[in-house]
Length: 72
Image 1 (cartoon, helix red, strand yellow):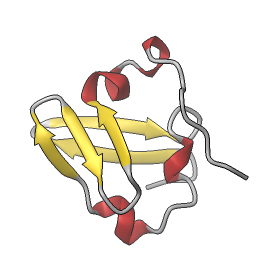
Image 2 (cartoon, one colour):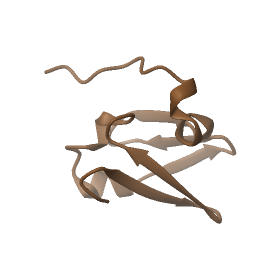
Image 3 (tube, rainbow, N blue to C red):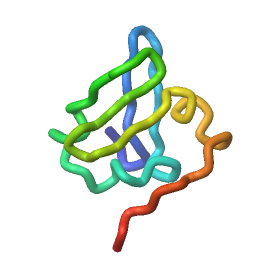
């Protein structure tokens, strides 16, 4: 984790989730961020944060518009 986002090691690939593209993680407790599941080959799920992401959306966030926002 950094002030810009977090790194995720998936198999042998390092993926970066910037807070700009994935704002849900910015203020999330680290313990909840670390609890990630991979229910299928192309899908990640953070159950305690109720966040579902397709792995391609992490690789190419510009191709996937932000469709959910944190209520403030």
